[in-house]
Image 1: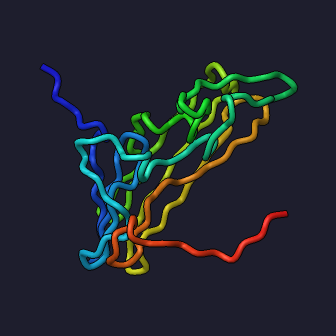
Image 2: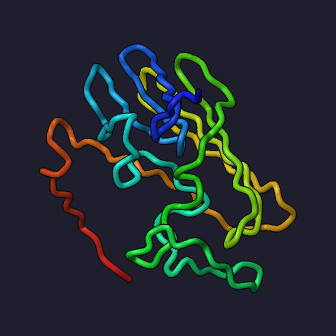
Length: 181
């Protein structure tokens, strides 16, 4: 009989001193990060899908691709519309992918995944993300390697919901001095 797996897969707990992080196998997401017990990201249970993509790694594009359409090498591409209500392809191809552990120690974990050529994404990519904790906090390092024969643009993003001190995130307002071009 198969062992039930939580929606976030295996949980990789890393720690150093008073810094601790939990990284998920599915989506290589940052599920928790604390220092001295104080949370620095919004956490969620391993038994639920990450709310609003919390903590997920976004490869090979962050954000949204309107209509799922883009052009590569002069050819139109059509990605699956993973945000159907908005008519968009959202946050890459790996949010629901099982990453394989490539390196693990008490203070770090490196997870690896491959993007195979598929409708809307013609070039294979290998990607890894390394999470490490130390006295300085949390370091996250993303690596992407094109293993195909043609150049392809790509992007990498992360989707942590950062905590603003002890206040609940929903109770905070961010004010920026900004202009548009």
